[in-house]
Image 1 (cartoon, helix red, strand yellow):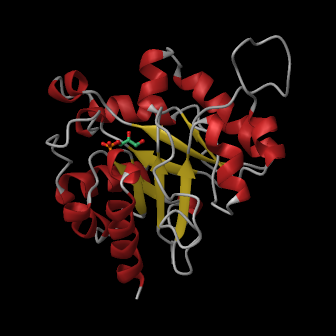
Image 2: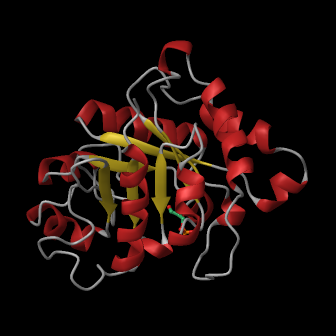
Length: 241
Ligand code: 13P
């Protein structure tokens, strides 16, 4: 009923070798949705290569005096389909507030982009027993009645280059996804996709993706390795059959 969505977030990394070749794992897939978030420098190449893609961040205004920024509207006009909003890197390194993230989501919808909005607690917040409170605070200003995708990315599970970072267990991730789903408006609960992000890899993808409330993955490190990304795409595809 909810189609799997596997998204690769390349973060501040160049496109992996062969990414733009026909038949690369980043290309649109028959059974599931595959999306890539490259740097702005690779966005046009992705679009020309018919890779469903979008920016990792975009300014909410169409244009103007915002040195160093690129607008969501410009990315839409280039041919983007999706956009990321509120990744923990942006909330942390650029002090984006939940209200600012919600404004990006609203702007993206206005421009006709599909937003994937990231939420998740830090290790300190988890250890302080504040996970539910944090998720509610991040979700409160979002237009949850709209057609958006949520990515639950516990910050403590994001690899940040360390391949030994443990992902959330499938059970724990499922519990969090069920909680997030319960916070959606009733009529959106069966349709809004909730992706898991944080050290998703070929060896845990199937176990995570087979949970009833996990509708896909937002993949960082493994999305930079075409073979690993292909295996995750294959795991999702297999589960649709
Ligand atoms: P990793 O898959 O490297 O843990 O990154 C997850 C993430 O932050 C995707 O947005």
